[in-house]
Amino acid sequence: MRQALRFGCGLLALALVWAAPPRAMAEAVDLELILAIDVSGSIDEVEAGLQRDGYLKAMVSRSVIGAITSGRHRRIAVTYVEWAGGHYQRTVVDWMVIRDGASAAAFAAKLKDEPVITAAWTSISGAMDFAITRFARNPHKGTRRVVDISGDGRNNSGGPVEPSRAAVLAKGITINGLPIINDRPNPYGRPPDKNLDKYYKSQVIGGKGAFIVVAEGFEAFAEAIRAKLMREIAGNDGPRVVRVARQGSASAVWLARSGRVR
Image (cartoon, rainbow, N blue to C red; front, side):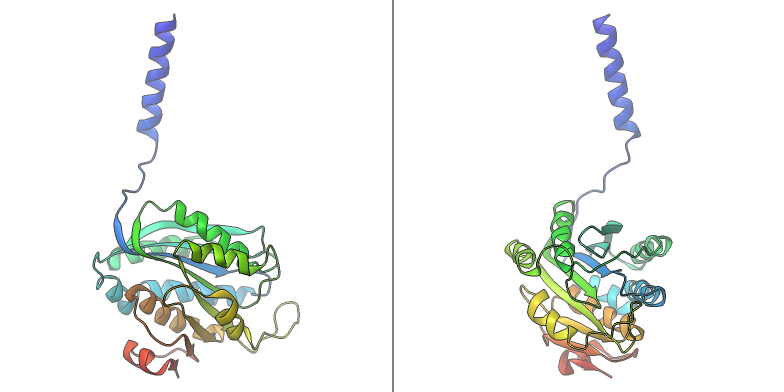
């Protein structure tokens, strides 16, 4: 009876192994990148859609794919996270390796299929804490690790930013930022934060080569994210603050020289 039971358990274990989905094979990549996007209540449905659309366009752009394929390993690992208050961080697209137009399109397709779910409050510290756990669960190993935080407000939920930021930096992870500055009052009727870029520069970003790209309005978001991704992926030095005023076709050379896109 015991032998039969052991035999049956062995068969069950094998069946579970065979039935389990295969884990992504670990790869060496040039960059491990977390895209952490603010979906708090201060962002309305139109703005949330513009944010998502900006990432969809940027990820499949020729310039971004060109930057990806110019690295030593010619590939990066990316995950897409949406966050709001201290209670809300959601992995929308898990770690994927992007190496060409087809894999970039596959990432964009997964992202496009997922709904945008907003939540109350803004916890930049929560997004940073969550980023540490996401890097720990990444099977791919990169030469550099970057968490890219975009949002339209300051930390007002969860713990303070300083200790969370210090914990991220202690692991050798760079924090870049994309503060969104616009003239539209938020859904609660409060005016926008005109000094959000200064807050991101002094309180949020940090680490080797850290920088912010300021999207001056949600309409500039697609161009801002494209410019930011190109620099993050290439790992180039440049201005600590870059401003994107509206969509355009600014070259990476112009961006690096002037620090401002008009």
